[in-house]
Length: 104
Ligand code: FES
Image 1: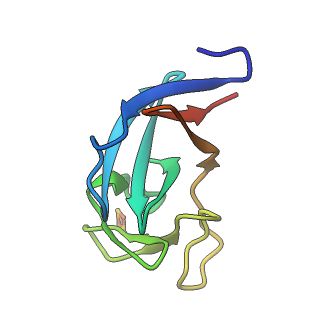
Image 2 (image 1 turned 180 degrees about the vertical axis):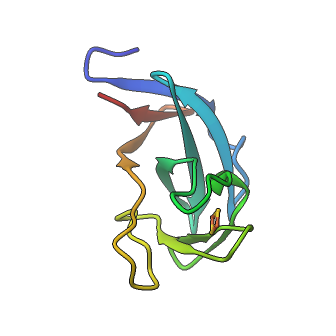
């Protein structure tokens, strides 16, 4: 892990556009998505009943859980249908061909 907390999770090209993949970073399962050319990282576990959000449906900077359809912003982690639930979000950067997530 770099001193600034960023950890390489994958190489560019390993996460297809419009999909997510799950990685263990700092002991947490973090879902990393590529949506319209930009990477996002959030906690993988859906706060409703724990489904893996990395399997969710990605569109318009959001992911929809496949179990019961809760939809979360990839930018803020907020549940987009009004509840106060949210998932944690993490900074992502690309260094060379490495996708890195910052976990502190
Ligand atoms: S577990 Fe995700 S919506 Fe129910």
